[in-house]
Each structure stands twice: as structure tokens, then as C-alpha cells.
Image 1 (tube, rainbow, N blue to C red):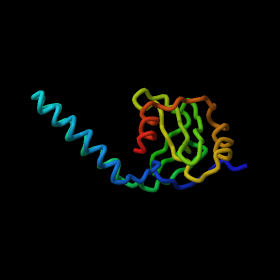
Image 2 (cartoon, rainbow, N blue to C red):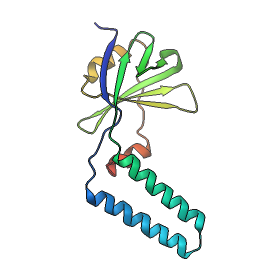
Image 3 (cartoon, rainbow, N blue to C red):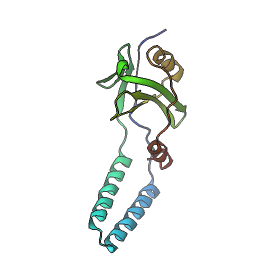
Image 4 (cartoon, rainbow, N blue to C red):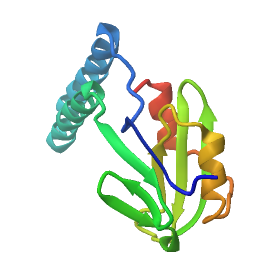
Length: 153
């Protein structure tokens, strides 16, 4: 059985946005912006403008290809190595075609969960390798993950 595995995958699941997605986001932002101006809340109006720009920029961004590897030392994402000594557990979320990722629970409080895309990799094969180094514990999906998937973000 292999102890190392390498693959590439898009850094996130991309959902193609049509014109209606952009129009709805624009209408919501315009409505909130006008409400902020009517209530003379300039800071909120600026925040809405900045938020709209950020959402559109991120929503239209295409995912880059990421080099991933499971090694005896840890999990590599491009050049960053997440050592098994600094990780508590793992869980594989696998509900194709939308959800295909590994969740790593870190010992760090600042970044407690690290999400790794599976791409077209076999989750059973990855699970067998990870079980040699980390315990498998059920992780919950975050509200942000569920919300962004629902909004096709």
C-alpha cells in the first residue's frame, strides 16, 4: 500500500455565474446602498460598496490549480507543509459532484480547520493513507461553506 499520494485539483469548486446572479447581487447592493444614503449612514454606504466589489471580484474569480500531496511528514498544499504533529484529526466530505474535500483539524486556534480539495482523487485511497497518521473524527461543515454553496459562490 502506498504511503505517499500526489495530485492536482482546483483550489475551490467554481460555479459559473450567469447574468441573473450579477443582476440580483447588484440589486441587493443598490437597495442597501440607497437605504444607507437615505438614513445618512455614509460608513454603511461605503461598506456596501466595498462589499459588493469584493463579492463580484471573488465570485467571478476562476480557481487556480493547486498541487497537493500526502506524505509521511504531513499534507502539502503547493509549498506549504501541514505536519501531522500539528493536526488533530481529519474527515472526508464526499458528496459528488459538489462536495469533495478533506477537512483537517489543526491544533492552532487561529486556523482550526484546513480544507483540501480532493479533485478526482479516490477518497477511499486517501482515507487509508491518512488513517496511518491521524484519527478520523467527524467534522461539521461551517455555515459559511453551506451558505456559499447554496448561493453558488
